[in-house]
Image 1 (cartoon, helix red, strand yellow):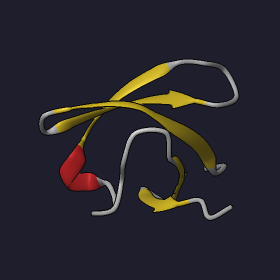
Image 2 (cartoon, rainbow, N blue to C red; image 1 turned 180 degrees about the vertical axis):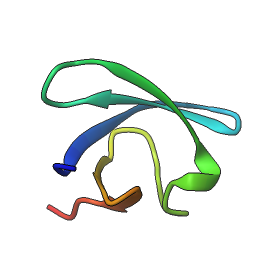
Image 3 (cartoon, one colour; image 1 turned 90 degrees about the vertical axis):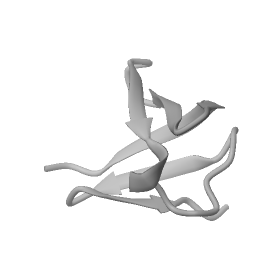
Length: 56
């Protein structure tokens, strides 16, 4: 699978609303599956079923 980049749109309790930066689709993801430092406005890279923070 190709890597994907998501922007954390908002955090709602135990879930984060992610926006795919390529096509604008929204994804609801459990925060337990995201890096601990995840916060609103961050970019996350999804590859091989693992999310990592995009530094930049």
